[in-house]
Amino acid sequence: MATVLDYSAGVPQAAAVRDAGYDGAVRYISPPRADWMRGKPIQRAEIDDFHVHGLDVAFVWQYGKEADSDVMRGRDGGLADARAAKQKLDELGCSNHPVFFAVDFAITLEQWNVTAVEYFRACCEILGRERVGIYGHSRVISWAVEDGVIANLGGGKHLAWQTIAWSWGELSDEAVLFQRAGQVTVGGIECDVNDVWHHYWGQKPVSEVAPQPQSQPESSGPIVVRYDADFTADMPGVGYRSIDSIQSICVHTVECPPERDGIAVAQWQTNPANGSSYNVLAGADGILILCNTDDFMPYAAGPTGNARCLHISLTGYARMSREDWLDDDAKLRRTAEQIASWSQLYDIPLEFIDADRLRAGARGVHGHAEISEAWREVNHTDPGPGFPYDVVLGYAQELRNTRQPNNPTPTPTPETPEQGEERIMIRWILDQLVGPEWDTKGPRFTGWKATEGKTFVDFVAGKIRLIPEIARTVATLPERLDRIEKMLTELQKQK
Image (cartoon, rainbow, N blue to C red; front, top):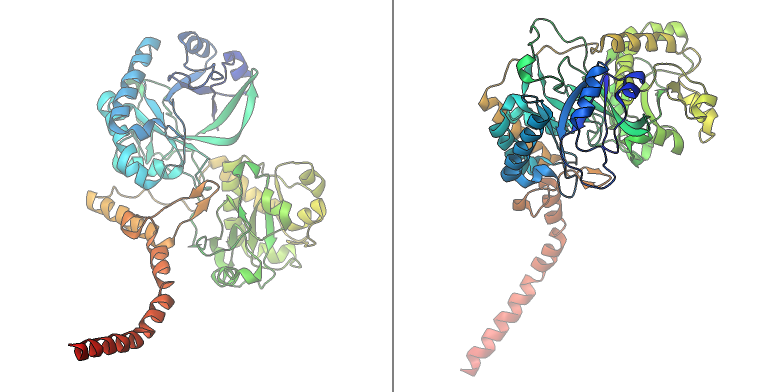
């Protein structure tokens, strides 16, 4: 898979970028926001240096960040930034190149619908839609695609650059670039690393881009897992964590019959009193269940293991033999699908690591037994010596080699405007019903004005809590009416 850098603290030499194994960079054409951003904006000499060394360059505009995001200036901001971006590209001799406009914060759907989408519509007015891209989390990419404000590259791909931040472990099917967690140092400069998921990621003028035949699927792209059930709204866990803390993938057994229905197991785990949960559960017949998002620590393997590992558990026993496991190939393949997706998303090697390497900070795949031995916080030994790591990791490697999911979903037919409106309305309804989910910075959905800034569920719950007080008031009404009647009688006698 091709990889490219992005950076703003300085400018590494193109030779250093090439020698480190990268294929190019996405570079800022916006001015610096702070003094330490000595790499903003890109200069013509850097572009020439890249081309001499066989490297490609794409462009991004970002001045503000969370507190003063460019896109929250709406239409006027979009017009101003798109004109400035166009002028800078003309100065660089890169006219007709596209630009990614950054949404570098946890933008909400309401912020998008009210303000940010107008910023992108304005950018399209100035540059043309075919030259407008977006950088942001997985959901804002989908919103931009739905609203038709970024370039459509065909084959389900758009000019979208996903960041792992605020994406909650989701991968965008539409994206052409994916920004990993963590940084690397290249030529003395701290850089972000990005996976390239499409043959075109903004590195050429749009006039030079030859469309790929639609009948030929992309050989690259994210491994998107299709779950058979989602219990994240009800599943208990320890709490949220930074995805930068993720080190490895841990395999467990539920310690139940291998033919046990995974849905039933997940339902049992929703009771916090049972003190058991995972990120993903693999049940009989290859059923795969999402239990907790990647940024949420399940009750799985002690404090350190919960914080550092992604956890997948299979219905079965640690005492099962290799032959027992191999008899359930569908479950092993779905497990491999999840492991391959995590491996791609978090750059985790598909290799087994023992307790010593796990304790030392190595990245890889292991079982609950290795966590027990590494940190001595638990004493479990699953998934047992018979678990066929070699087979599961082999399946996962096949998926990584092709970068396609084990059960790819056919490309959907384009939806009508009416269907798009219905889908947006369904999402709004679900936002109201599920209640506010929280990340490290606060609620992801804060509700509507009509319900006092609360979700529908919390609004109704608040009113229900008033029922005892109302009941007490009603219970006193007869006594109050009696007093009023007596007062009226006395007044009549006085007359």
